[in-house]
Length: 488
RNA sequence: GCCCCCAUCGUCUAGAGGACUAGGACACCGCCCUUUCAAGGCGGCGACAGGGAUUCGAAUUCCCUUGGGGGCACCA
Image 1 (cartoon, rainbow, N blue to C red):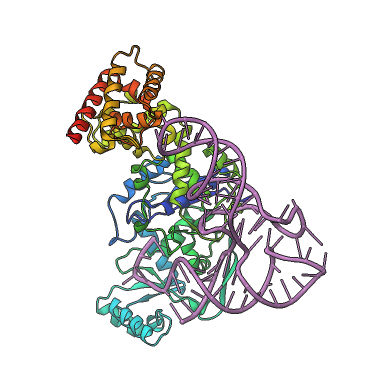
Image 2: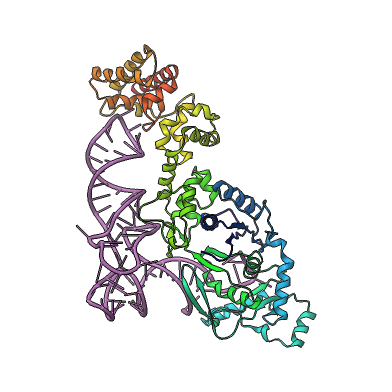
């Protein structure tokens, strides 16, 4: 399809932890590159010194690696088009900005932030469109010299044509035309010598030979400015494909922290699988056909195509992600799952090993929606003493005394049992329920609480077998004592 | 306020003029299975925002309205 080698990039700004929205953009770029056999590049746009966050880049790298989105050029891997940190490319931007001034496409502006703020304030008051009034565009040489003599460090602004319009093409949104009157003379180079996003982005995309720009929808309005810049430089304009935004589950605005996890590290911490995140993220804003929901990484690469991307914004659905995560957990090899669960139990204070987990995993695999849930499903295996309400030991539609009798009979029955396996435990307990004149479900409910401390737990007999006779008897004793004390 | 974009079940979406009695998935509700909870199976609920126009025929094309989103910085 493309006539030039495919080179795409993500250009995150290190101002915070890696966001799912950025991850989705990264995924689409990565898929596009892999599908077309092109290059996927990571470029750090660290041109805002005031918002710089030192953990952002390490977090970005860890997150991309965790998701399995490998990059061909960028931080830690280098490449022929570096450096890949914009803060290390300052001389470049200054050079190109100066060139634009010399050629008459840009000019130096000496207006103070205070004047600009006052200007905007007044425009607001008069209900005019906010924008720079181009005061410095028409400075005489003498005026300019005077400002310079005052020691003011100017910014460089683009000289946007006063009339006419700019038209550009977007692969998803089609042809868009904007009147130049809607644009003001944007700042290219800040007074601290750093470029703005617009300049740095255009310069780097050109120098790095980026073929397709795929980024969030929020950039659509600034494309005309960039096109004007490309034209001023006489450079070829890359192919644009803006991606629909991910909205909050409520649909009110962009996805933000208030709605739950939004940072990749947070999803990771909550026990989401990278393969589920990838599959889920791929399906928000993109589809392949009318029925396929589950895609392996390889299938995604094979099927990914810009024509499958929707042009309307999509809401983020935690329910759907959770379902998909559960699905992927169920598909895991039990040994693999055991290994992935270990850190979550350790985090909760249970120093278990994967080997200890292997027999337990089959009991919980189809119940887990996230890895973190392993704690609530299995903590009773690792506790020496259970804590729960004694009243939970009273069976459904039974009295406390009847329940106590039942528990004592259970203890007697199990104490004689050899071997002690799930298969040998069940029949005598069913027979016991009969003898007691209660339903098996009633009896099992009591035992479940006694053995696990919970009303909801993995399958009872398997649990007891893993616990072993000794620990089961101890817990029954504890339960008998608690219930006895409740009664008396 | 101005500019740009978007519009199919609650949500993610299929649909590129007749194949639509509008398909799938999540969620939800039943039933089955069942020691709890899950998983699984079966079934159900549920949408083309409204109005014009084009056409023999419109979810699909055009216009308007409405609604939603994004953008208007020496932030990206």
